[in-house]
Length: 211
Image (cartoon, rainbow, N blue to C red; front, side, top):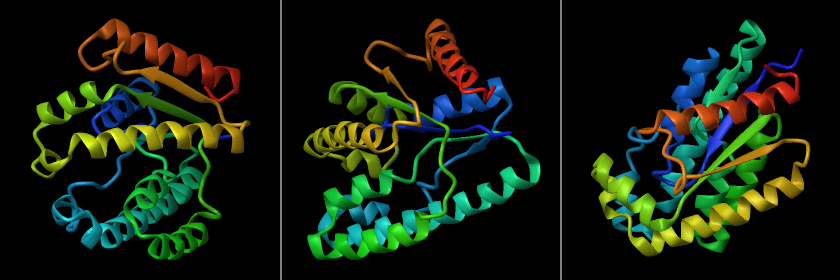
């Protein structure tokens, strides 16, 4: 039997963690949350991206590698489904945008070594929204380091995510990607929107005999 592993992805502020928590609570999945606030380089990164990007991305990569290694053991030992509020491919999205070409080449080599035997999700939930919506949501949650995120940076990030998801779908046609538009759906404040999103996810899992 294949144990479900769902990942929720999308740009900063789109609602990944909120939806992942709802999926975990509704379907009784183990919740895997990415480490963000614990990154000691993050404030410095947004102050000076060129200076601190490599340290920031390596911290995220090493911590996500450790989390996924633990999840691999957990799923084998307990056979319990998992939902994560990230996919490790996001490391390449951020690294490619922020690292110099020579640094990115080194980083990608390390990434490929660490992720070659990592667990692969059965389903990817991709949340997307306009830059206006994302900037409003970031401002509302009030994280100090996110106050330094510029609109230009967010526009680039949204474009990068769209491109990478399209590439992911071509490279992994066996893994369904469910897309939800955050401008049209507010699953945090609107119960009907949340029920709609959860139903689509449940139907997709059932089609793959994972629910």
